[in-house]
Amino acid sequence: MDVESLEQSIQQDISKANSVEALEEARIRYLGRKGRITALLRNIKDVPPTERPQIGAVANRLKQLAEGLLEQKTTALRATQTASRFYTPPRDATLPAHEGARGHRHILSQTVSELKEIFFGMGYSLAPGPDVELEYYNFQALNFPDEHPSRDLQDTFYVTDDILLRTHTSPVQIRFMENNKPPLKIIAAGRVYRNETIDQSHAAEFHQIEGLYVDNNVSLADLKKDVEVFIQQLFGAKTKVRFRPHFFPFTEPSAEVDMTCFACNGAGCSVCGQVGWIEIMGAGMVHPNVFRAVGYDPEVYSGFAFGLGVDRVAMIKYGIDDIRLFLSNDFRFLEQF
Ligand SMILES: [Zn+2]
Image 1 (cartoon, rainbow, N blue to C red):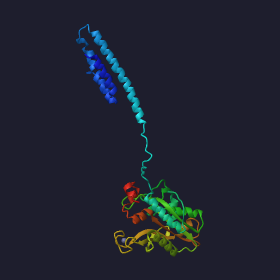
Image 2 (tube, protein in one colour; image 1 turned 90 degrees about the vertical axis):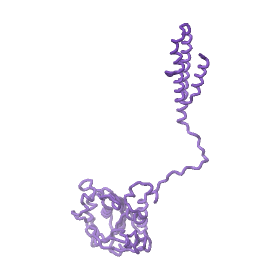
Image 3 (cartoon, rainbow, N blue to C red; image 1 turned 120 degrees about the vertical axis):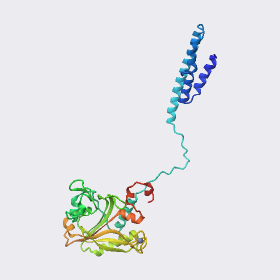
Image 4 (cartoon, rainbow, N blue to C red; image 1 turned 180 degrees about the horizontal axis):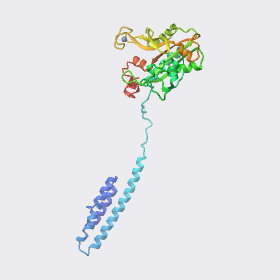
């Protein structure tokens, strides 16, 4: 047996091993069950008794040598690996910067801002109000009869018997009038909640913006003028407006407002369902009972109110056919606006 060449190959193999795996292979090659040093020790019984002490001493020395080298190398490899985990290659400061993904405002926020700007330009100011409302402000003070269907649990999210999620932004009108005297010209904007079955055109939460103007001698003509100015600023100066009689508890008379289709100018197309008109908002003269609820004398003051769905405006304006997309968090949709 060439002890010297065996000793050399042990030293070389272990020093060449540059990974934990390579080192383990080297260990198995010499100290494994079929390893070369193991074989040397096992075969001692086959050599003549006189040579056994010498061979035994050589084998033990090689075993200790291999074990010592393996331990040193393991420690060295671990140190290198730890260091490389904390190593960051130097940056080239001359490379162009990555342009990160940049967010932007949601299409509904953009639409609310656009609508607010138009109303601010017409002399309205913004009045705040809570999303969680008292039934009194949401219904009673707005002249909803006790048996009105929208008070029903099926349509309204109740928190307790007399606390609910507002079903419209109109309670803001009551809160504002309770604390202010006419003349007043305000808008209210925000989320509203209805216990709706969700589909393409119905959501359980959506957005409204509404206006209220109260003074002496406010007339239906004033309402029509403001509605027309607003719609023409939003959809263009050629847009025509018509009022259709309707019913709301808090206004009398009440109307639904249609505008000529912005896509076909009233000729009829797929956007307007071939009728040339698009329903855009509700409006009316403030009901005397609403004035009484806030301590205004209906003989002295008159006013108008109107309201529209922000989601609906955005859907009409941008040709969006499913209201659920607004809350879907789908970037493919959101990035288009
Ligand atoms: Zn049309």
